[in-house]
Image (cartoon, rainbow, N blue to C red; front, top):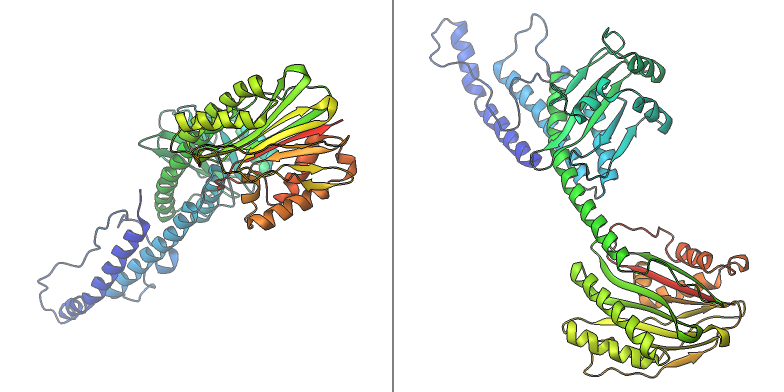
Amino acid sequence: MLDIGLHLRVHVDALIAAQNDMGVCDAIRRNALVGKPVAMSAPHLPKVAGIDPAVPVSAHTAGPLDGVPAAPGAFLQDRLAGWVSDLTTLHELTERLAGTNTLDDALHELLGAGAALVGARRGLIVFEPSDRRGPVSTIGLGLAHAELGHIETVPRSATSYGRILDGLPGAEGPQTSPDLLGDTGLDPRHREVAARLGYAASYALPLTTAATGRLGAAVWLYDEPAEPLERQRHLVGLYARYAAAHLARLLELHRARAEVAALTDELRPGRLPRVPGVQLAARHRGAPRGGGDWYDAMALPEGALGLAVGSVGGSGPSALTAMARLRAGLRAYAVMEGEDPVAVLSDLELLLRLTEPARSATALFAYCEPAARKIVLAGAGHTPPLVIGDRRTEFVETTLSAPLGMLACWEAPSVEFAPAPGEIVLLYTDGLLRRTGDSMDRAFARLHSAAASVPKALRRDAGSVVDHVLRTVLPNGFDQVDSAEDIVILAARFD
């Protein structure tokens, strides 16, 4: 990985050294003017890692005016100042890129920074890992979705980025097309698209790393025949090397999160049961590293319904394993003794103590009889259910109880209540409250206010109620990539 800060420090030191040598340069010039022999060779540019001394400087420091001699020290100082300026720019751009934490954000940042470095106005990146494990995406800069579609109609072998992605011979490095419309060998379809979209030249770079191979290709488009200067190519090449390494890290993180999400989905109910008299809806969003929040809904004998939510402490594969074990155990206990929620949670506490002695968990189990509109529930350190209706919006007062695994023997009395026709019982985990960023008291108040504000027209559908509550409690979005909290909501509407 390129350390831009280190290069900047090296060049500043070189600039200081060059200034100290200016007296020697002036003495050499004076000796030459009076005809004295010169015993020293002319000064030359130092070789510094990551910078090619043969790269020409920018136009504003290109050299002396015609007929006006330039002092060697001034020329050296001017050239080193140009290098320091370039490295400062690279340092700022790579810092901005390092601040991105998703593939889409990094690709957009790379495309914009590259366009600034090569002096282009438009461009696109095709992210297509060579191992074909995905994800695959195309990001445009200054190109509408329809314009990207036009470009994609050009045969891949006729485009610079397509040759890079397909690994065709001669496409291992940068691909320069300084005058597309003047190229007699240009594919007719490519000529048509270029003329329609108004670009006349392109410069493409492969995005590769030694560890992951080819990740994709970036191409920048010029409105007129043009190509980047050698200095610009050098700078964008350095930036692309760093960007490829950053993209490779984000790709591995994306794949790991996708695998965790897939595993989490497999460990949760594939579909909710259909029980007469009850309408169910559930929403779940897992934390990137895999949290331990879960829910379940199961049809029980004699037309009964079991509802459960819970949260296992910790994150990652171990939390997912513990969550799956508890959910499977609770299903078994609910079938055998579901009418007694306290007995169900007592057995669950014993299972946790035997299988995960160092872990704690919260849980809530509700035994519902839809025909009688009767609910008996028990909670172990879990957030209280919320009843939403036309005449009331209130939390169910559950008896305070410690989480599972915290006491030598867990037991708490159950609570019984009867929802009115049309009322909705909302079960949820504390991740919903924690994602608000408020204290718990304020988060509970926000949840209550969101539930009370559900329009009457939406209360006929449990899913619409859940979505309204989520939008109101979390106005900044349900899918926060950087959040460490799971969200689980399970709603039951009683006819």
